[in-house]
Amino acid sequence: MNPRPLFLMTLLATSAAAPVSGQVPPRRLYYGSTGQAVPTAGGAAAAAASDPQREADLRDGTVLPRGVRSLRVEREGEVIRQRPHVESPRRGTAARGARLPALEATQGHGCRGYWVRVGDEAWMCSDGGLTLSTEAPQTRQLPQVPEGQVVPYQYAFATRAGVRTYRRLDDIREDNWAEELERGMSVAVTGTEHIDEGTYVRTASARWVALRDLSWARPSERAGIFYEPGEAVASVAFLRADARAWPTVEEAARQRGAAVGSSVLLTRRDAIHIREAQAYRARQYVRVDAGWLSAHLLQRPEVPAAPASLRPDERWLDVDRARQVLVAFEGERPVFATLVSTGRAGNATAPGEHHVWVKLATTDMSNVDNVDLYSATSLYTVSRVPWVMFFHNDQALHGAFWHDRFGAAHSHGCVNLAPRDAAWLYSWAPPATPPGWTAVMPTARDPGLRVRVR
Image (spheres, rainbow, N blue to C red):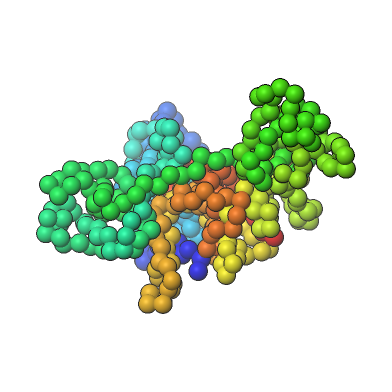
């Protein structure tokens, strides 16, 4: 089965806030970090801070107090909507502790306090989960990756069935466990603690697990290749096997050189630029930066014509399931290519043209809730999967830290990417994810990335 993202029910749930009756008052002005009044749609700016109209607006939440620069989010996953109305479509979610720009305020339906605009088509309700702040907005993109790492967490896997998790360290001594992990289920580690019984790790889901029952993940360091200006789609390639590049075509054909050490060893799946092609003795050879080698050793992207409805410079992806190659385009210009892992037999990645309908910094994925627990051949829960872009129901492009089989089908339906590739694509793909946001959803004005699977 395809991995079921555990965030979906929360993200798409209808808000329970009661609508506020009455007409929404006009937005007259807001006060920026300089303290100067800025006019907005709906009326003229007040001339001075002591203006009675401004005081009335402050009381009803129609303007922000002087000096307010940001909005601090006090609850994880606080909802951002497209308009200041409880029934407006969701625009995304914000992280606890994030400071988002406070641009203007108004009253609106479904919010007992006031709505604050934090971006283009992005509004948040003040009821209970937000605090106005004079601090500057934060500038960190999520997820954050520690220096020297390729993924946002240290990940680990249960080494056997029945690995117990605990809510508190005190529960360990009493063996008051919360849940059990199946073999291979993963956790995202945020810290460690030494107690009498041994070393325990704290997970991102606020559980404690014995370190002796876990094995550490070794995320792939692999990365794709960027096209140079003017290069055609087939001007890059990936090695099908380990190979040697030689200084001349003749040496490449003989697989030996005049001098020891004249060849360069290239590794299977390495990404290369093809600089020149030449026929020699009825076989094709190519020159790459390291030298000459046989063309049959290369896996080259082949992409049909771009979609007919493509907008100029529109960003989109072509996913080739036969070759397990992804190519990113801007209009008809290729910009990046990499190896991927799409769905295995029985769990095929859906062919056709799709659009990313939500982007998430991280999310948990599991098949526990959509299989027969007694007959399933395997259960899995993958914690804090990074750089996730859902494009067809619960199929997504995302980083995979649990394998290095890129170039071969290996997923439950998603398009698995090496972490470095997933991070770049997530940043490049529309809609952009503003700093402090944990999820962003497209709008009519800011549509999601087009993804063609074939």
